Amino acid sequence: MQFKNAPRPYLLALFVLSLFLAIPAQAQKGTLDDINFLEGHWLGTFNGGPIEASWSAPKGDNIVGYIRMMKDNKGTMYELFVFEQTDNGPVAMVKHFKPGMIGLEDKDKHDHYVFLSAKKNEALFEKDDASVRIIYERRKKDQLVIRRGSKKGDGWEFVDLFVFEKIP
Image 1 (cartoon, rainbow, N blue to C red):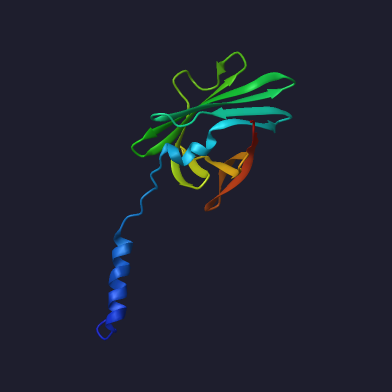
Image 2: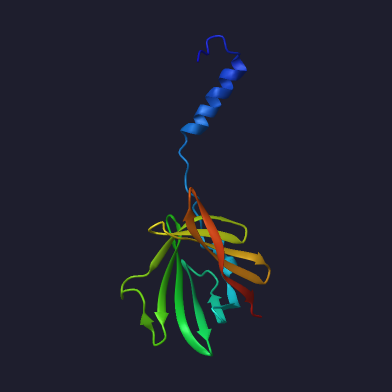
């Protein structure tokens, strides 16, 4: 392709476009404020029983929370959460326990998710091995949904994992 006889506006547009293409894309850096919509006490159902969750307001460099799953009035699983602010954005750390506080992960291990992006009332995290993505989404004023994503072809397919209503 020759540009020798190209009009000046065309050359200027190509130059400006080449500058934008030369800038590397950067992942969005987030803060705990991007996930402050989690704060509160939430209730839903899962596997035939109630599921309850609670997250604190951001304080310092962290948010803490839990999920309690029950069936027939007995605990079936507990998840403890910590969201911590890092230089690269928030990270989510989750540990799972069976009744009796029997850890499902090794003593010094946990599931670790990195922040990918956020928009109003929604945040996307990815497990450190890139096998799972999680969307935390405040769909309505009193509804919180946690969606789980799995790789599907060249993209991701998300399904509602937990749907919570806010407990006053």
